[in-house]
Amino acid sequence: MTTKYAVIDVETTGGRAGEEGITEIAIFIFDGKNTIDQFISLVNPERSIQPFVQQLTGITPQMVARAPKFYELAKRIVHITEDCVFVAHNAPFDYRMVQDEFARLGYDYNRKVLDTIPLARKLIPGLKSYGLDSLCESLDISNTHRHRADGDARATVRLLEILLEKDRERSIEGLALDTTLEVRGEHKFSKEIHSFRDTTGVYYLYNEAGKVIYVGQAERLRNKIDRHYLATNEKALALQKEAVTLRVEETGSVLLARILEHLALKKLNPFYNKPKDSHSLGSGLFWVDFPLSQELSDESCSPGWEVRHIKQENPALYLERSGHGQEYVRLWEQHVKPEKELWSRKEAEASILRMLLPKNALLIDRGRKTGEKTAFLIENHQLTGYVRTELATSLVLSETLRTQSTPLPQSPYISGLLIHALRGQSLDIRLF
Image 1 (cartoon, helix red, strand yellow):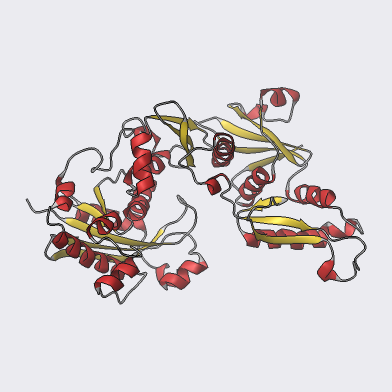
Image 2 (spheres, rainbow, N blue to C red):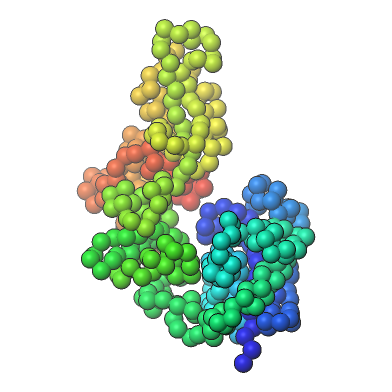
């Protein structure tokens, strides 16, 4: 039986995992010797393309405006890849993107998966880099359309051909024909998480001693957990081996999932999470003080706000994007700064929250099931806790609601998550 490989590359809009969309897809069906079929198409992602991605790929909104949407291509993609091994360079990314697009259509897309990165590391050891561009240079593979789906997929076909030739033990074909759980993209938790495709929440992986070794959150928990078992780098393989128990905490609310993940990472410090994972917001708003003896008429040395990337110091407010911070500074200087002649750090930091958050309100988000809501309590411009309720009529800021609520600590990071959710208009606001 001849193994067929569906060598695939996708270009995307960029953005956070779970929110980006596909802008171009290329599929080449390779039988080990020849390309026997192919499919290439731009895709209308129905969302914006980040500017740096436009520069990298050359794919603009105008180019995809009249392109078919993913649902119009889905049947063709299912048909052409049927009975094939899904092959890509950095396969966890491309496979996740395709799975996410199908998940939005309510369809489970599952294929055997092979990643050419670990295969190249094994069969061509000693190279400085195993990125596709570097491999093309080292192996003299032509790629006249870099960072476009057709060019990168064609280059990956040639790379796979070279790897198959070097694989004298025929281990690649053996993996492709193997029917063990791992090769099918399934794993020890597959049955346990089968119903979590569209579930939002936090998940915890435990080792045999009962210690949490990894914490994550996602809008589609099943896809996120599956990705741990698609990855083939050394750290991922170690995690796959050590994790013996999984616990899922459904939230319904994306904001609550991000808050709970952050708190768990800070408290538990799991071994397989990177230190930066507990602070995924990378920019911050800083109040810069100068001695009052300095000439305050010189704006270059006056106290004021500064937006910059975070290193070690703690900002007054964490930001999803630095551009948001620049907007906040302009608003503060226009509407808040004139209230006082001189501002201390404490006063300035409190004034930012007063400007960006309502004084007293309930912020209503999705719950874990139909009819349930998650309500975040804002009191005196600060997030104090959250509560779950099934009764919309009970969503009033009352002593009973305060008693029922689960407290949340006040921090510049959690405030940043909350303000970003408000910017995205994902929360209903009830002022009191």
